[in-house]
Length: 383
Image (cartoon, rainbow, N blue to C red; front, side, top):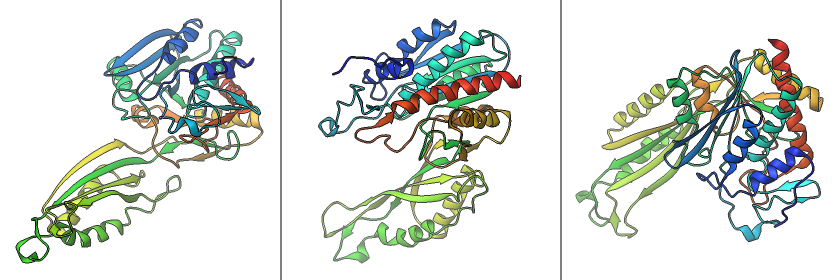
């Protein structure tokens, strides 16, 4: 491993974080490193451990609206490490590109956040707003003991975030060309259609749940849930898993297991989706068991001072006005937005996240830190 650090503070911190193999839900010492940097800027540090998950809440200031940087120190597994061109946790730089697991998702963003604030407090030691960091090691995993628990902890203390910048990789073609103003919700149905097992040669003595469920599934997948709106595409359903049978070709299965997921927008709701599926099951008179799991509600941050400040900061550094988007999967923004916070996601290119040789150009992280600093200056100027 090349232990040298890049001379730029943002890149050096990103390398230091990447070299800590924090595969979810492990933090591997990332948060203590961040806490040390933030404490040096007079942030009050509160480590929060829930279950096996490390979280960090750090806040600076005593009055004004609360601006929060949110992110995660955990990363997905590397996959076959021998398939990488560089060791995945070496944080090596090749041709001015930082290679490593978490470089884009999202240790590079966290490093840019820290160095942006370090510069900002030097020029504006007492800004007209408070600043905070909400960092978790449970974003890439089941996400039950991370940001959602920190938000519960904050709610119990009547601490409210006004503006939140989540450093998820949001850019598509070039840095800052796109930012997220919302995300679709996600709901999963785990359905068991009950039948009666039997011999395939004697179907009259059995009840095949696959045959019974087939018309239901055809109708379920053909539903138009909504037509979307100006900010979101139509809600969609996909069957993720389906399983029946014993593995023998002469046995009629006794049960059919179906898992399906809906990514839904603000035109639909959990209650409407559940009611529609239950009505369809009743229509087809299927004996069934259905359990639901909601991993996030849809949210949308509307145009306002915060979004305008984000756009102005990106344009100031890159010369391009970014486009708002709600595309993609879910993020921890889904836990923060329901509190009333205005949430925007802005980070580096997302083209290589979760891939072999995840990477980000060095220049992008340096400019991302400048964008975050410009955002802080924009917010200070509006108050």
